[in-house]
Length: 358
Image 1 (tube, rainbow, N blue to C red):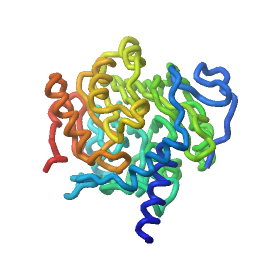
Image 2 (image 1 turned 90 degrees about the vertical axis):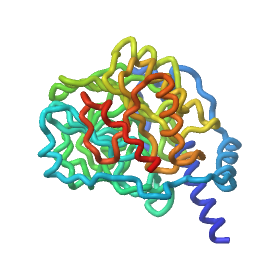
Image 3 (image 1 turned 30 degrees about the horizontal axis):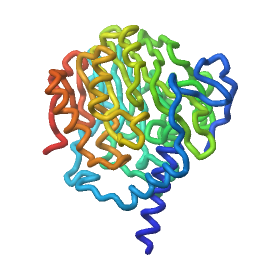
Image 4 (image 1 turned 180 degrees about the vertical axis):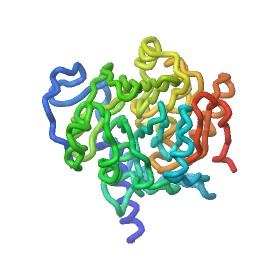
């Protein structure tokens, strides 16, 4: 009986967090072409998830069985220290995968974060909801001074209150889509540190340009604030490197436009995980991830949004296995550094460990 109640509660959190997904106040962003009738919109109209859709998802969550929803063996994690990060700051652009879509970038000898989540759960609650498969390679307190934090959207697996509150004093700049700054200010971030961008807007910090570009997704952290903040993909350029981060997105024509305007890219950091046919319009399947990489004119492909949280119905290793096969067939270099491992961006093709199959 209690097990069934627990399963139902987890399912409710799953639906709240990732389908309906503490509300940010809605401001008037009429200057944005994406903002209409009090909400942000994708480039093309999207189906609306009604209560029936949510109940079907919940029923699948309760009843559907999978072979390996979470890892049987420990996910390999390279522990990091503050001293190590300073010692490895040798002038070469690099990145460290921290888990899920969280990344630590080392650009122009400065440190940046993408969608940092150090909390134990991707959930509005600290006692229930999707829990981490592995520890983060380091704690927020161990991070060096951070020049910029880039956020793609406000869902719990990308924007974590615990993390923001622990980082806010060591971060110089938060670069976020329109509206997301309201969350940050509520959590104690100084407004002067926050730069909100609409699609196609750019900011330049310490020689690193950061441009918000379209994605096909949605936003919200509760049941009443759906699409009250914008979502985005990101173009990030340093003196050495050109990167594209997809954020969360379904496949759409916008990737081709991004490639035409900003490509080619040395490395694409592409969503590949937590997909399902029931929400294919907001999360890409591996075939679409590969196509999006090609659309934006990427050289090497780093798949993220996998291997840390159980957010869908596929086995935990399926996204990487499927994309590996597809990439090999298309002669695309898929790079897969282990969690916490430093990857020099100019040498990223060397990092092809298939660690998830060990």
